[in-house]
Length: 635
Image 1: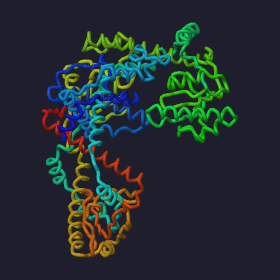
Image 2: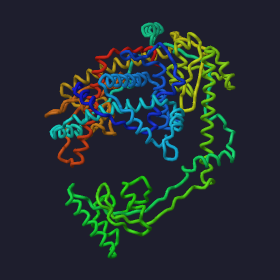
Image 3: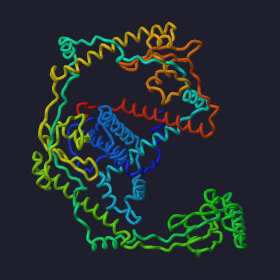
Image 4: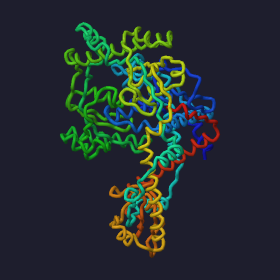
């Protein structure tokens, strides 16, 4: 299967899809001017290294992405977990695997096609035309280089193209769709009782000897995390040239230089009647022209244009609105249509115009002449742009000086600060796994806990944590991880021992009650004995919001009940067990789906299988590629 995919893809001309700038800006790295060279890697894919800085940037940019989505004050602690960081590293590894496989298969993106797409991005244009300075300015302000931005598009396109081919190769029968709907919409009815460790009477007495023995056996669970204090210099574009304002002369000069940008072109409010050509021969052409001329005759005889359009126009999108096309400018429509429209006087209807899609009768209903916005109307906009441009210029100049000084004196943060006339600030103490404020950013913590930074006391490479926001830092104090003393954690040890005792008693109780359930005793009888009313769930689906999702997951794993209910005791956690009595399982009814519903299910299943196939594709690449992961260097 995988070989077939590669053979299919290798003959394709891939079409580059330029996605919204916000996403690649959020998920890809920073300007190469600030990139660091290191001989150590957090992962190695074949002969290609993924550096700790690349991982830190990916983690940081993921944080920036979620900050944009959820807001500046959102709680993003879920991004600080070891599992999340490892998942980010796995995505970098997968991207590199796909890139290497594409290179080996000879898959390339034509430079001309890539250029076409970039030229079409409005953010890179000035007055409607691509501007290379604007292109570089936008990329730089978002921490990107052209090479990195273009590579990100190619990488995204490659994975999207493989996914598309996998979906296209998935053939689903109607029987498979029916089976899926039966399972998806299946309902189950059950009774349940939750057993909790907190309700168990356990011996709460813990002697010093017992606590000490438990601590000695589990001392690795009671470690004081390594922590650092760092000095740092921060450059933020928002803090630069805050008091500087553009002069009137400067703004007027900008207005003159960009005059074309502030011109609203001539617009024409148009309607049309479209006559399709049913065929490719001369007879079809003549027949369509005759119909168009007949419609024109009706208009000349006084019939209302909108009414005729509703009756005869083949343009489904506009005919119900009387042929209305709205306001049109030059360069939007088919050249022949545009010529016909812009040759008309206001209120006039054209003769039949042969366009790309048939014959048109065009009505010019109203005309707006070209208008230039006066300077006063755009003064505020020009002022904002001037300030932003000067902030960017100041940021780039100051950042350059800072980098030069760090390279010249890699062990003196004070000299770097003096060179840019900014203060050296000192952080509070923080750990590698978690910090608040500025150092909640994982890229900063990764730099602070970098082995070379700690052992050699070097100033870090500049770290761009957001567009036009840069930090360099130097470790001022480092305390390595160390065992906590028994006295420090005695109370925690006692709590752990008591919880362990309750868990053991709870497990024993659950086993006893589970045996009674298996022997045929009902949940209701056991509940009465325990003084617990069973939770009753009637005909609930897998995603029922009214039920504990963990309980639902276990209920839907049980076999179908027959004449007798299916009963079981299931462990949800060390302190939670569930007694379940499943009484009914009813399949969903696929006959209730209309055509649109069945097509929606088909698409969902195609996407699901494509995801699984793509995972298999990556697993195959992993199995044939040497991959080394240095767990210790994951921040």
